[in-house]
Length: 470
Image (cartoon, rainbow, N blue to C red):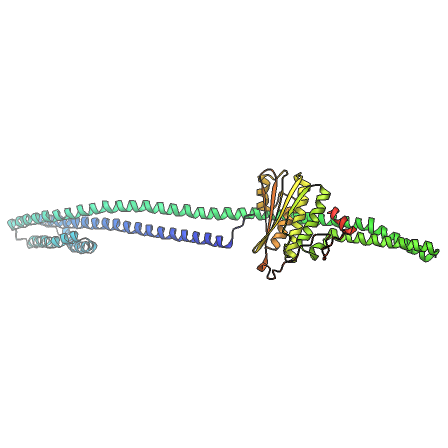
């Protein structure tokens, strides 16, 4: 099953955080620019409004003055007084609002004395009308002079408004482009965030499904292991009852006969000899059961000797031509590693015999600095890619043997690799050697059946039977 390392997860997390930070910075920058552009658009609109107010207030003052002069109705004076007070305020506000525009500031400075002069003429005309002197010529002169000033003032206001309209169009264009970029950045941020969330969710969902499948496989494995354990106990119980139990019963009967019916000397010797044979057979049966459960060669001489003994027995029993390649001076390893390698070898050959249909098999045991590997290959039916993929992800879809191999290897930090191209299967088990065996002394390889002195010794009855059974 594919699992991401802790370092890879940290790298993904850092990348996601950096992407989110980049999105936040880009979104902040674009929104700030958009807010700035909108401010200047609004500022231009305010300036335009103030220019229109100034123009309207001047017109209101002139209209109120004309109405008062023509009719003498003092009810027109409040509008005149209000407009006269509002015009200077409009000029001051325009000067403040256009502080960033040199051209507009110059126009306002040019406009201010003209406006003051025009307001002065209006004030003089109103005062003249209030005095009721009836000097029409003087009023006409004031009107003509005021009309000329009004034209100059309108011309300057027209220039100012034209420039503000141009600025408004430019700033509105910038604002529209900035708004478009803001939408693009925010859309990209949303898409990136959704991709990150979706990828994380899919990864979590995949891991959850794989974990559920693994848990299901573990439950099945536990159940099957219990069944295998029960079957093994039943087989051992049957062996004890049918073989060792019968021998011990026969021995008891002979001994009871000796006690209850003292025979003649010759008969007594025959019964004792029979008892000795029964005891010897019992010892052989006990040794056979011991070999079936755990080969003593594994503890006494190591994996190399036990593997050769087991392969020879397997080849005779299954009639499969098995080739074992292992160094004669293969050094001893920690007990747990040798046991795991031996169990993997057992299960691999059992699977070849039961499922592959191959008549040949190759076994190669190699040792490199820091690791030992066991390769078992056959030329049988092979495994489908779908089964292999399911096994890699969940360790399911195959028998309990392969799952058990993986569990054994996981316990000591090993790994199991299975290759199959539709014809034949290659199984590779790799196990790290802790500290590369600080004591690197080599143990001489002693083949089964060969004593310490180098002389060949015949295998015991229990060894021969166990080899055939396994």
